[in-house]
Length: 502
Image (cartoon, rainbow, N blue to C red; front, side, top):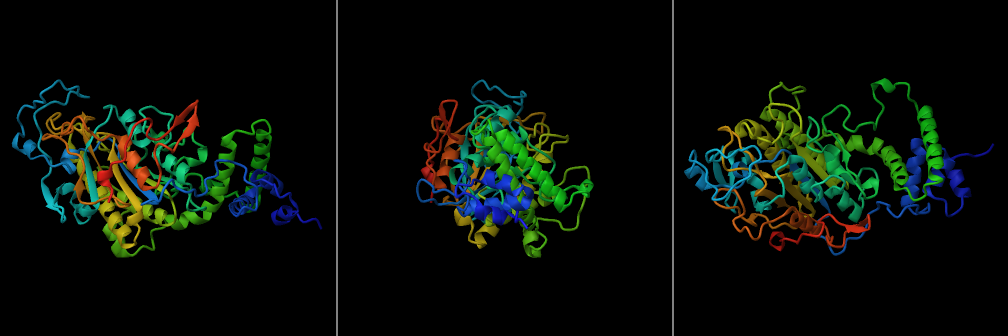
């Protein structure tokens, strides 16, 4: 009897057999796809793409191997969370006077508004934190604050693009795509770049924030929703897919392999087909690896409590509350730890989505106390637990944590309780992975309106350059030729902030 197994075909094949040829000869199917990928990893199949995402050497010895980025969608208020301004307390309720014409997004130039919550010093560094983020107190000595960040726009979509991709317009790769393009994957069975969106949905721009754009498509982020019944869309058959069996699935992938073969005949240089085949390979392996990585049920009770995860509540009331935010952010934080523990290179966690009212994001035009309070308590509890957890596992030393938002909020009031957009100054902070903790690098002025030293602000390019540096990447050398231009994450800007590095 003729042996048609993939193993037999491999033995009788030419030494130059490529992944695609192997898939077509083996008839597709998730088993054959996964086998082809593993054989390719072990150099038993010829390389068929210059964009193979296998792990690559950095430019110089790195301080860190991976990144967890925390993005507060909607613009978190620096002066109500991290950047203590006694002058605002002193002048609360007085007519605001900026000493210059101010272009406000929604004319939010009412009286000065003191920080909504009280501040207290924490840690050996004595860093002042708002009571809403007091959960960060135990780890504040590991954090370096940058209070003189400046943006280029007060429009959410553009400002979010700028922080996420380095450009204000769509069509550019996300930071995680650049990192995984530059360094590759550390795990064959999980995506190198994973995105954990807000549990209610996407923030401004949606998946374009983590798209690969002109980079090879396999470097785009994979969105996962921890806590949902189906956290990864289309990975497993849905309830209506009870007709699917092993035979029909193999036949489906055989047909797809055949269609791909026909599609490739006149499109040898089309990277999208390579990415499609790689996505099949990854899907096959993720069906086994992802459920285990996302399963937090075996985590000890004390750790789930530390993250603020509620194991009893299954549904939440309509009104937003801190308990919901703690549970949702805590789940994403502990899953982030489990992912980077398993070799995921870049994890992005989002807080806040772009839909609904009352606010389900940080865009607090009407009421900072109402909108920021639950979100701040949720992210602070989960992030503090994440840093402590990474530290006790020995992972914080080579994991960079970056907290950011698209811009800040004005020191003047809007409608009495809210704050307008402030792209003129805001806060980022970093921890772990070679960062010098317990410091402030760059200050805002006495009102938190603009940088104290207006001639030397910090821009997103500097943050991106610094994170890449910690990963062993020269931001000026990480380039991709697109439309006759050598594109890079930092465009033509950016410098490494040496004061942040331990």
